[in-house]
Image (cartoon, rainbow, N blue to C red):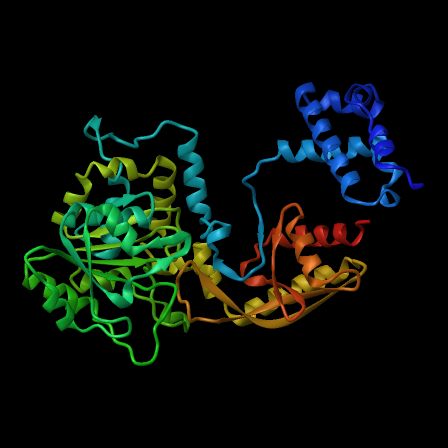
Length: 473
C-alpha cells in the first residue's frame, strides 16, 4: 500500500452496516445470531484500528479492508466463542499426573459409571433395602475399609479439605505438633501453616528443618496439645544430614499421652511402587498399620480417580469428622462418587488396578513398549511426508508429577521434532495454539513429544496438526 496518512487509512475501514449487506456476511447471518455477529464485527474492526495505529502506514495491507478478509476473521472468532473453553488437550510432556492438565485420567470403568449416574436418578442418599434416607458415603465406605484395612472412611472434595476438616474436628483451639522439616507448600499455594490456621488449630513446630527426633515431640507435648501430625513432603526431598521420625513412633507417642495422631500423605498410594523399580512411596495401608488415627490423601493423583479428599482411620475419629458442619460444605457430588467407586472396585484386585487405571498404566510402562510406541509415531509422521519437519526417536526421562516421587526420573522415549521453517519456540507455540492444543516440552533446541503420556487417539491428530502447521502461510 502506498504511504497514506493514518487518517486516510482509518477512513477506509468499512462500517458495520455496509459489511452486513455483503454476501460473505449474509452467509454468516444464516449460521450465527445477528447480535453475536455484530459484536464479533465490532471486535474485529477495533482490532484492525489497533493494527493500523501500531505499525507504519507502508506496512498496512489492502486486503485487511476487504469484506472477505474481515468475514474470515469474524468467522474464526465466532467459532472460538461457540466452542467449549474447557476442552481436551494432548499431553506430550511425559508428566503423568500433570496438575495443570487435569491430573489423572479416569479408567473406562469410571467414565462409564459416571455417564450412567449422570443421566438418571440415583440412590445417592437413599437406602433401597430399608426404604428410607441413606448416607452418600456408604457407596465407598465398605470398599475403602476392605482395600486399606481402615476402621472407617469419609470422602470430601479434595485433600486440602480433608486436612482442614480433620484438624478442625479433632484439634480446634489446641496445639498440633509438626516437624519443621514437614512445613510444606505445594502447588496452588497450599501451605500447611495456612490450612492449620483456618482450621482453628494452633501450629507448634518441633525439631529443625533437617533433623527432628522423637524427643522433640515429647518435650513439646503440654496441657494444650491436641494432636501430633506427620506430613508427607510429597514434591521435595531433604538429603544429606537429615532425619525425620517414622509414623509408627509418632503414633505410639501420641497414644501414650492420650492424643490422636494424623498423617497427611498428599498423593496417597495403594500400590507398592518398588515392584515397578521406582523409589518407595508410602502406602495408605502402611500408614494405617503404623497406628495413625487419621490418614488423608487425594483421590485424583496416584490413586488414579476423580478429585477427592479421602479420610481413613479409627472409627471414633472419623465419626467426629463426619459430624462436623464443615462436612456439608466439603462433600462430594454424585459424579465424583460414581467415578471413585468404580476406581476403588479395580483395587480389589491389584493386578486389575495396574492394568486398567491409566495413571498406573503410564507409570508402569516398560522401556521397550515406550520405544515401540515412539518408533510407530515417528514412522506415521514420516509417512505423511510433512514438508519442513524432521522427526527422530530419542531417549529422555519422564516424571510422575502431582507431588509424587519427586526424585524419580523415569526412562522414556520421545519423538524429537525440528523444523527448517521456524525455531523450536515458535513451533512449541504453534502446537499449543492448535486444535486440540498440543502441550510439548523444549529440550536442547528441540520440541519433544514424550510418548509416555500420549493416548492412542493422539497420533492421528498429531499428523494432521503438523501438516496444518507446515502449510500455514
